[in-house]
Image (cartoon, rainbow, N blue to C red; front, top):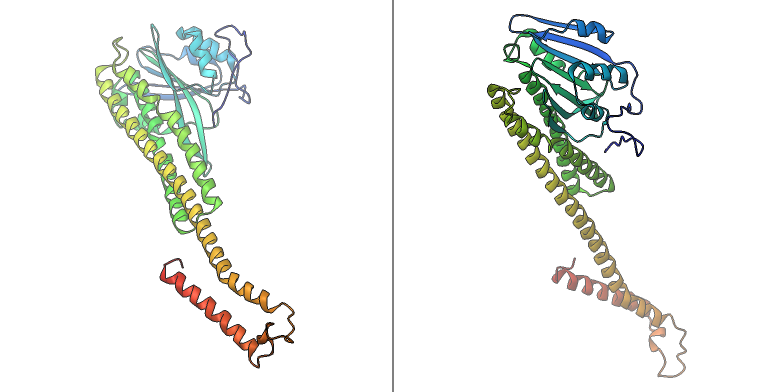
Length: 355
């Protein structure tokens, strides 16, 4: 689940290297709005988008795809983005974080969502927040993870159209955090299903499901835990880029992240407990099987002894030899004796609650 993206040793800092498999063509989109109006347009080249920028409105520049390095360089030059931050954009294994520069914030978050059924995806999203602009760079060019936010902007619902780019950044980060809740709900249902299976009939398939759930919880913890630091840093901002009103909303995001982390830790403890339950159940079943086999062996030991004794070839010519061989009902006596011994031993085992 942990993806690695690294450059050869000795590469100069700030060198841009596209991730493996990234498409060379990126999707450009500009959303401009204020309290009275909104425009949402797509562009095929950076020059046309740059000419349409308006510092008097909120400018949301969305780039989908990480393969167009020349585009990223032009965006970095236009907004004076730090080269190390741009380099981190291309590092898709980056830990979620926030960095403060002179004229902008750089935030790395991770979106967790279901794609095409039950396939779970982890997608890195980078944000550059300035006074009048917000740049988002999404890893996947085939899916817009912020469509719900665009819908709110178009309809004018909420506070977004009345506030600046800092509130828009909050809304996007809040969207990233809230998408973890459905995933956690799915994980909880899976753990509950495994718990029922372990209580009824432990099997290796249940252990596999439990192991997959534990790995997923580790990945979710890695994605969610750093967001506490992100929101704490943004709430303590004193540069003026984050308004006081927005910091109050960020506090709510901080509470959501804390709740998510508590749920993840609870599920991890429950998974560990279920693992112990599985091992205990397997050990208990093994002990039950061994106990039954031991009782069967104990019952058959005297019977085997008797069969061995009477299976020996004795001659009754002398009185000290086996007189039972010529008894009229010797064979019947033998089976009656075997049944009495077996029944007596079983009754004794039941009286001691060994059966």
